[in-house]
Image (cartoon, rainbow, N blue to C red):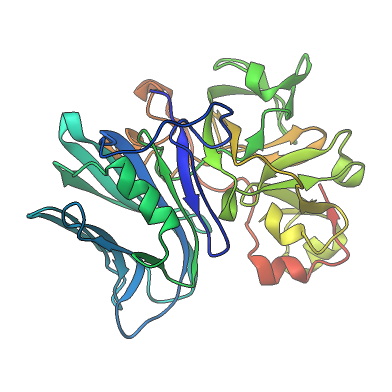
Length: 363
């Protein structure tokens, strides 16, 4: 099923294009046609609260009552409420949000013809994922999609919301690939563009014999929030060419300071924590949507990509059970190809820890 992101909203701007963001053809006038299948994705910074916070609240009365509300409650429950005419739908999802400040990606996907949907909360920093089924979800109309992203009087977002995005098909839930299509992965035969790798190919990893790829996949995401691309610049980190990744893609740090501070030969950190260095910077003139790739190996490993040491895809959250896997980027991967081991390829540093490594080498 083709996935097109058709609408986005941030605190500063909005965009709406029924044929897909970035499409060059002129859009037809938008009426009351329904988006039979789709996705509503919100990224927000969630904080401890004492009263419920409406992350998104949309409500209109014309041409009939219609509304969408996503609310974070003090106990960490995320509540979804949708109204269409006289019909109401409400779903509550218990999560671990509410205790500490976190970035959360909250998604509703729906397939109205099949009368099924899923409501999901994913915390990319620690891989925690919560989901619940939504029975017979209401499809949004294209007019309401446009109003959600462009009508600031009838549609409000909380100040901690990074973006709201809508797609015309269900988007994958949980962990998302983080490498641009120009990334080249080391194999025994030399570097291979990640888009040309196939399941069964061998990938060179650090300190061990090559490991087999179980899955090579991609998805398209709006270039907002944690999905905004960053560039790691050559010649830092052993790069022979610039490497473009999402902000959450993890790379490796090593050196004497790493061993002294953490007692580890190598640690990993998200690319966004490296922006204070000369080696990493946001990409300029970015498209509204980018396709990101990753490789799931037999074991979670560190591989060389454009010369830098980069973590392979961590699919542990998506592989927790079959129901979660079925809505993830790994949905089409045969069950017998599950990795032998899950877990971290290297200890992961948070932002404040990464900032202490001012003198560490990367890679």
